[in-house]
Image (cartoon, rainbow, N blue to C red; front, top):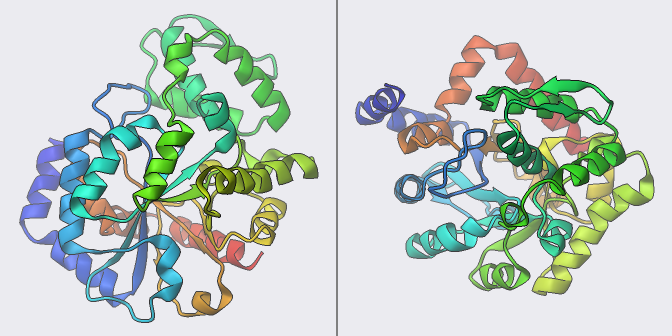
Length: 342
């Protein structure tokens, strides 16, 4: 039913209206992807390969797809909605499934990776929790603070998101020690799904800008030790430059979480573009051409219905949310604007 609904909305001309609104408001849309694969994951479903290609084909035809790191060179808003394609985490299916499609349609993209995880071939902690939950349904898991939580027999996405929400508030060191213990109970082959440095270099040679997603995908807003925070932000940049030969110009906060200190450190490290995860867009503004630093929100794209994600990329969901929760959206936008000045 959901797929049918968005198919109908697409066929009756809603995209044309949304495109006009994007252009009229001079909106910059950054689409955030993670996994593109035909694998089944009940807790964090990848975007199927054919659906991703359909979406890219539609975006190529109807939007102005740009390399985000080149936005400072754009002097005038184009005749089509301004869109950039962004990937996080460094999954191998980017190399296997996404890169050929990007090449086929000549679509620019950037991919924000965690060099420390690439070195260890270890997943982001949220996905270690994901795999552990699926492998241990019906048992009890003890959280870092000692709280026991029963894992449902039919563990679902809502349970996974609820648990991650609790874990975000845990001290960073304590959380990572706990996650490492979980990882030891997971078969190694399930954790070995990230790109190698050789694959990453091939992506870079193909025109994909390699950005930073921190060193090990920790919640940077919960790191209180300045040296540890600097390692996550600065060491990541140095490792990427060493392995690819190119200095990353983009930094994406893991899970979009930051505080005043981590935002300032990212800016002081010299990243030109800073990415969050607020399901919003920015307005095209020549000011950031002069400042050479800008904070962008991104729109998460993950549902298997490509028509829905195409409409999401053009702002349907955002505008509906604004009608229903105008103040909440305004508050999120204010947070982004505040971050830009920190």
